[in-house]
Image (tube, rainbow, N blue to C red):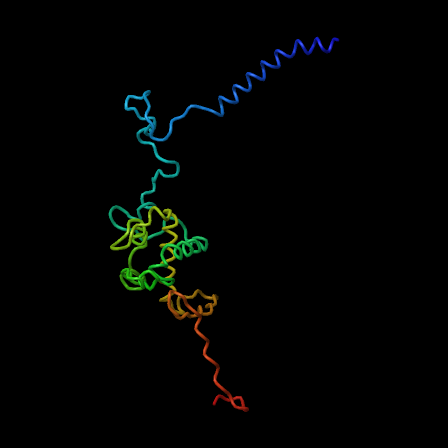
Length: 222
């Protein structure tokens, strides 16, 4: 008997609580909003989408370091990296180069990529004197703004990755023109990479290694 009376007293408050919380939940899930570019009579210009406050800069895009974003000092390309060149930087540069640059410039930067075989103008080799002597900021600037028939890659490749690519191009240039004197003391020269031959349609196969000279029973070459 007592329990029934208590339930009668509590039930109205419980129902009211459920109604209030349910109403809040619906209001939070179904909120008024404007569709993109919809008209709004609230603002004088009738636009629901509002412009950012003047001077607003996207997070991470302040661009205080002018050289990092342009590769130039004043109006001239600089000749230093804006951050230390490590193995990780070169690995990243090689990865990005092979994705975005190899189709035209080739794996070793000789300008013999796949795209020029289909009628596009062949780019110059990175190993000519003009580009070997060009400041590294110049390589970054060309990747950023394009040059000649080459389009800019500012939208496709982040600034840091463009610097990594520039550093890797420098490594390519050194690799194709290095001598034994350039090898640091105590370092071993790695075995040369296998050569490949073109079999058409952009496909390649490793070149066969030359067979060793035939010998007679005495062990001396014929």
